Image (cartoon, rainbow, N blue to C red; front, side, top):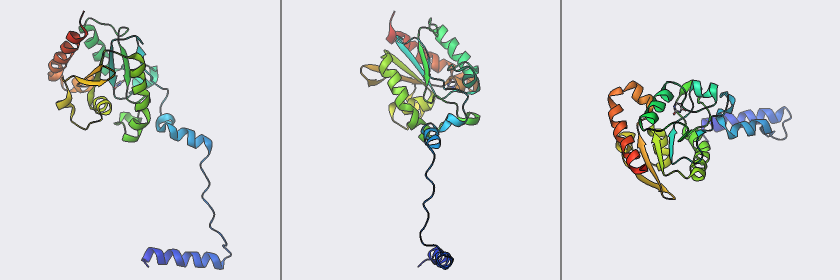
Length: 205
Ligand code: URA
């Protein structure tokens, strides 16, 4: 018997001497607690950021998770990274109303930390349903979390970006760098522009 087992035995023997006849079950969590556990970020987010744009879009952009501004406004990509994404979309001679924009997570992780695997597992069925409903011609995955989630891979974004993958139902998926990464690494904007040109070519006129 291990030291921990001996200690437990002594504890139980003492409790029995004090009248313990059965070990009480821990109380089961309330329904409210069980509902909250379905969406672990529901306790810290301000609102759900579901997605925005054209449900008939031929092109979808998928990011990581709402940040501070998105959580406040309820729309994806409206902060600094979002402004850069808007410029990229405009450089493609499109508008945000032509495309559909969504994220892997629908709720902001506290302090903008990276999404946890459990949070991605909770939210990704909704993201996949959004794509299945919209049926775009092309999905552009922005950054490692979107690319790795949708392609079920852990290959680094530097190796995934700029390549077309056949996703499902004839939908083509191309990963590129996340606009927030470009704000920190502006020299890589030219690589993203190469990827956008591939998308424009694939979309055609
Ligand atoms: N970054 C994301 O990935 N999504 C947003 O909506 C905003 C910033």
